[in-house]
Image (cartoon, rainbow, N blue to C red; front, side, top):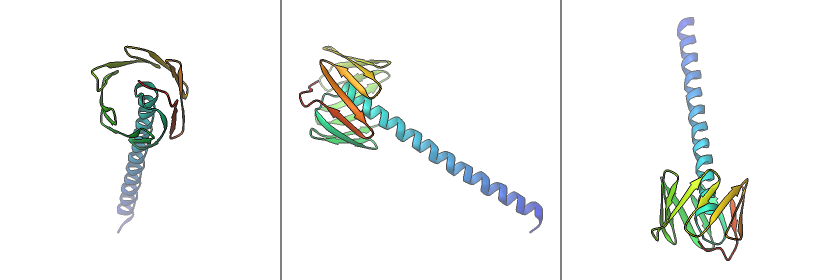
Length: 138
């Protein structure tokens, strides 16, 4: 093997390592986006109560398991579908998101940092945990 071949192999290995690292960073960003979207769904859209613990696209809590697949959330209350900035609810209702505000037929919920406030109740998120008031019912 001559010097040129060695340099080419080194460049190829460095290029492959860079691709692997970039792919890993992309997955981390996707997971962060999914995590944030799940928090927003639990805090601003879904009316379950109690504590939920998130792992990837799944949240488990007192009210059961919630799974996110693409733009669909499967919940104990039925299926929610996100279309753009609108969430279609199982009962035919609509929750519209505008920035940090979630609006449905009966209430407005506002997100400020890790807190969602609306309908006289506050939901708090910390890491992978979402705490909702026990009396919450949307």
